Amino acid sequence: WSRDMAYVLGLWYADGCIYGGKMFDITLHIKDKYILKRVAEKLDYQGNLYDYVDRQAARLNFSCVVIYNDIVALGGAERKSNIIVFPNVPKEFLADFIRGYFDGDGCVMNIKGKRINTAFTSGSKAFLMSLWKILKEEAGVEGGSYDASCLSIKFGKKDSLKIGDYMYKNNPELFLLRKKEKFSL
Image (cartoon, rainbow, N blue to C red; front, side):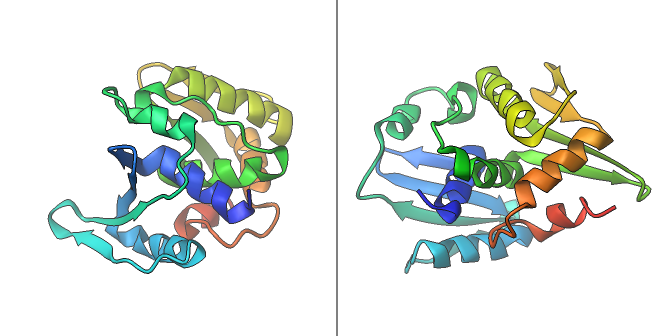
């Protein structure tokens, strides 16, 4: 485990795919391609990054020599996002994993420079409930709500600021700048 690996795993949990249990990829909006380049550097990846102009997306494909059983198990017939459970991440890397997941399937809304709301989405309610519990225990979140119509957990200003402090507390190297900047009120 490392902080960077935990971030990459979180990002993959949000925006990644598995092909045949051997090929992994992460696809993001083309404007976020820079973070895929940073991930490639951290992984010492020598392959290509792919642009899908028609989808306005960028993709990083990689194969793994060592494949963990719990991740490979996600490659079944169901969509990964519907069946994921929160992985067993060491406590010292939880903020990094959560930041990676947030960069893929989280959002932060800064309303008129005075109010901030955050949300995490997932097709897996079990994943979201575990995430919410961890945010309460580790980030000091007090409120929040589950929205079944959006498959998300949502937080108001006070909790959103706590989440931001928690995710960026250790001056991480990997993060989406456009999301981090919105936590600065």
